[in-house]
Structures are given as structure tokens and as C-alpha cells.
Image (cartoon, rainbow, N blue to C red; front, top):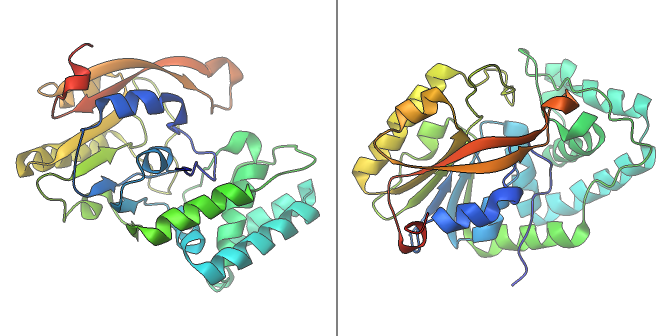
Amino acid sequence: MLKGKPFVKWAGGKRQIIDKLKEYAPDTFNTYYEPFVGGGAFLFELSPKNAVINDYNKELMNVYECIKGANKFDKMCKELNHHETEHSEDYYYRIRNMDRDKKRFNRIADYKRAARTIYLNKACFNGLYRVNSKNEFNVPFGKKSKVNTYEGQNLGIVCGYLNYNNIRILSTDFEEAVKDAKKGDFIYFDPPYDSDTSTFNSYTEEGFGKEEQKRLAKVFKELDKRGCYVMLSNHNTKLVNELYKEFNVYVIEAKRNINSNGKKRGKVEEVIITNYKNDRTFNN
């Protein structure tokens, strides 16, 4: 079975630790929930038949919607082809600045907005997605002379997966996204990471600070009481260890590839936290 892979480069993407995530995932579950789906690496790897995927980033989730919609999918790909042909530094900034005029931007067809999101992700500096307090994309040009915005086969696989399974696409708060989760469902949280110093978390205009981390832990515990399988990824910080001290905390090593300072990229300690154990975790 061919599996899809992320169609955007996303900070905190999980392809590099997929094997670890699979190792700690429950053997069986009912509906899969991913409230911070991002690029969808774990979603595509698991390829569950029933899933609820969500991200507060509405532009990102619009891409998922357009990949799922047959007519929108074709139109989006044509727009991407156009972006590749026209690509230059001036063109990049022209496309990037489209969201400065909110009224005009909100009238743009959804497939054009989806193509814009993918193009900016592929053409910007280091594949970073960042917005300012006005929710305006503000990452500088990546200085690439050419960009490949998509792989046709991969987008086709993702389109097929979203269409031939029961996949619900949301763009709301993470707590709202899991309100219907029931006993036996599996929820994977991959939030913007906590940091003992400072961290990038401006995927949306609100950011994701210490209070949000605490609210997330409260939701984790509520889902645990419902009888759900719950797993969470985060940095190995003092706050995270305190918030989840009564659960199973597994420390792993991962690479950080997105940082404006190249010296700050490299290996970091992350944690995978679960409210359950299965046979595959006992040897760790």
C-alpha cells in the first residue's frame, strides 16, 4: 500500500521519528484524532480509516480541503504550475503580500489560497511557516532560483486517502477538535513545543505559550478519564515533565532542522508521553 507523505515542510515535522511514534502507538484503536496535524506525517503513516484532523492554521487546513476536493485539486495544481513558472524574488514577495489587504484576500478562491500556501512554504526561507500579530505571513524569500511545489504522485495518494476513508477536516481550537472523542479512540497531540528558554511557535497570530501548554495537559487528563488512548510529543522541559508526571514519559533524541540560526539546529531531547502501555514499550 502506497502511503502519502507531507506536502509541506512544517516545523516539528515527525517523519524523522515516525518509527518511535509507531513504537509507542496503541496496537488497536477506533477513531484517530490529530488536533495539531501540521504536515500530517504520522497521519499518513498510520492511514487510519476513521480520523478527525485539525489545525488552528486555517490556511493549512484549506490545503487539505482542496486536495480532497476533485475540482479544487486540479485547479490548485494548475496554480502551482503557474507559481513555478513565474517564480522569482519579486514574484515571491508579491504573492506573500496578498494577505496584507484582508478584504481582498478573503475573496480569493480557496484553491488559489491553497496554492499560495504551498508555494510560499516551498519558496520561503528554510520552509518556515510564521505569521505576525496581524496574521500576515512574514517569512523572507528563500533565494531559490527554482522551486518544485509538489509531487504529483504524492498529492494523488493523499487525495485518494482523504476521499476513500472517513476523514473529517477541521480548523478550530485543539480542545474543540477532540470534544467527541470516546473510549477506545486514539488522540495524538503534537503541539507547538515548550521551551526552557525561548522557542518559535508563531504558526498562528496567537502563538502557544505556557498557559496553553497547561490547558493542553488538562485536556490530556480529561481524555484519559474518558478511556481514550492519548499520546503527546514535546520538548523535554521542566514544565512538560511536571505537567505529565503521572503518565509514561519516554525521552528520545530528535533533530531540529528549522531555525534562523544554523548553529541552533541539531540534536535535541524530546519526549513521547502516553497514558497507556503496550507490549512494544516494555523493553524501553
